[in-house]
Length: 368
Image 1 (cartoon, rainbow, N blue to C red):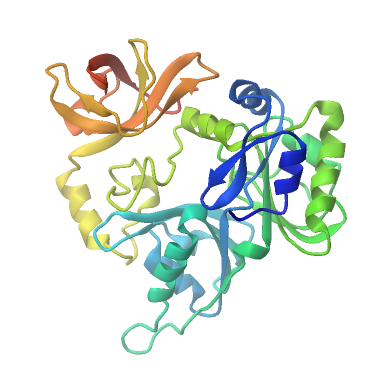
Image 2 (tube, one colour):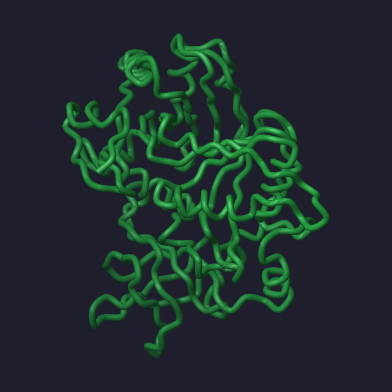
């Protein structure tokens, strides 16, 4: 298993460790419910250094991003980020990702899922060729995933704690924007507000060299100690993102699900050319046959990944993609694909758990 620069810190802090996307990662420290509540009410630190980061540079960088992603990256200016996805040739999703504009038209950072680093790199590289007629040069690509540390400090008090460590204005950082500068005495640190928990906070990207990892980790926890800042594992990250209805690649979206079925029409812009544009446009015009919905359990039981979803007559109409006992709501919630005619709010659906049909109802996302 690979290690992040913080693996030893997690072990010393007594984290329950497990393999995730090939890395030895902290799953929980004091328990999911307690860690979840810490982030919702105060602030917590996630090590997400396993995520992938690519730098795309050159005159054709924006053109390449426009061709491989569904969102319109031409709208980005320096200091802005965007949520997007990489559609495949069938209209499914290679991955979902973040696009950061470092220098307009010339330098961008793409942040991809840990389990898809090689797959995404190969996919983008495959499209990194001049267009017919010689337009658009080959773009300089750098995979900086191995050298990049990433800590997500999330929660309502996160920015107050971190502001003491930098002159950059992170207290007033707007959602999906970022700043670059000196943080905890370390230069060239990128701080962004693109959180995956819905609790506020920032992500901190920096190079893993000259003891930066140790310096920044220690500085964050020293600054946060009086406020009760704690390290948080990936299990609570999953319950936090699910309460917000944020998709997880490999569960809620994958190579077989289209962005329109997944409720990601808002990041699918038909004002430009991109992979599978025609397929997705046709899908939009003709209408989708299934839809990703949020639901809460009416009967007692926890929906799990891949449990069948049926109608009252017991006919299979979809499947569960994510499910948990929500720590904030104290009830079981889930997401799943269902037939379009049963996707309306308050529709009655049933989750099949072994031989039982447990009643659930479609609800609005976010749950919390």
